[in-house]
Length: 216
Image 1 (cartoon, rainbow, N blue to C red):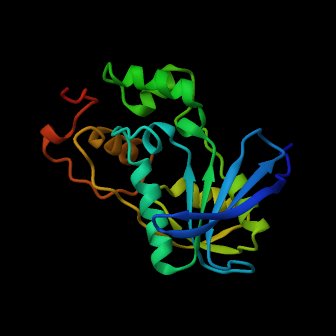
Image 2 (image 1 turned 180 degrees about the horizontal axis):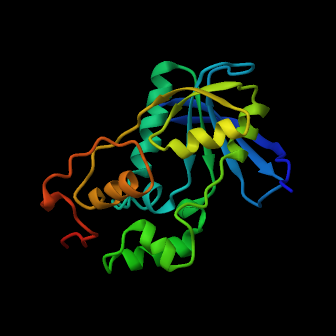
């Protein structure tokens, strides 16, 4: 029997950023011990077709500047996109490493250094491809009065996750970041094995790289 998701807005304040001032709300839930964030610009109550990004935490990229993924660039692009429109929302979910946690994510990184892709590494650690959930995001949207969204994403699972939980997705807006020499193989794996809707040209074998340590 599934648990009904309940979210509680715990705290709220304005947050000045490089992209403008956002209203930052912290949410608690009845299904985990995480503090999830709603990063809002403009009035959004009782809203249809709001511009929304559902984003999962990535400490290695967003804090440490890792080049292994495109998470930081996607988050920044979403904030900039919303700021230009003047209204929108980023829901920041605390589900590091596709839901397996930071420690296991780093264990997966170690396996990737041996040549495994992200999906293979997760499987070797005993995890499925992706443990992330989007019912919490849907509950936060409902709490804020959002009924339907235009979703900034390349991931069809996010669309399915919202719609399965009562949020209509009226449009998908691609959020593709140009690959760098280190994350090209990661992005190819996202497209080929995880179904992400990416337009990539990997016809040149030299561009399909496993992880390589950058030159010192």
